[in-house]
Image: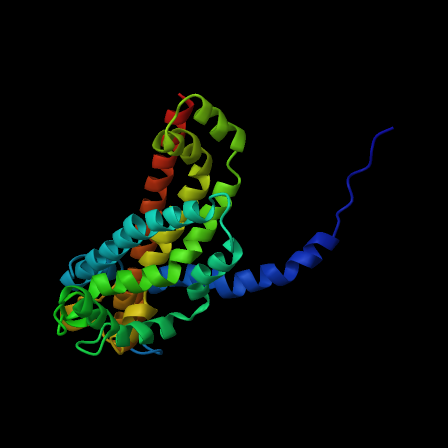
Length: 297
């Protein structure tokens, strides 16, 4: 006997329908429309003119855009090269056996993540003030630091990196701590019996086992850093800071789209940012793949 054709089950589609409708209305359709919008020059919400690839060309020849890219890359480098090693070190300290109150310390370090970015910007705007700011006051009392050190005037990017470090250090620490708790203890013990020192155990035993989580955290940090907007926007009261030292790509997009009213130009900036993030993601994935092959070899 031949089996009949499989019956179409409508139940999964009924359950998926709310998500599919929301995805189409709020993501897929606007995404497609933004491609066409990026090829138009808009004059307010009701008037636009087709310009083809001129928006992309104008973005790429704008020195202000490239300054925003340099600032964003500098912030991203600080987030990845400073924040992630500190988060891993903190996770390793909390993962040591015999640590009392581990849950309390974990909650303390993770707590800043729960604070809104706007509130963080307001806090660090006060902390980095001249003379009365906590940073200059503390450094002055310890090493005779200049009370008029211009954090928010000349050293904008270090100030942003420090503020982001305070907020997201515990967030990345939790990822690394979860990865370290899943490291196979028998491999660590075996390497210790074989005479491996702490650095050798970390490099040859621990790192290969936490590499998938580390790759994910690096990618997450890169994407999040390239999307920075609220922190400098609030810290400098809606501006990019002195001489555009705090200008980021997303802030540049906001200025072009909402301050100057050219949403087509802003859409072109958004698509260039998406391409840039895709390049970073593919590069990071390739590096992770090469590292994995090297470990297997």
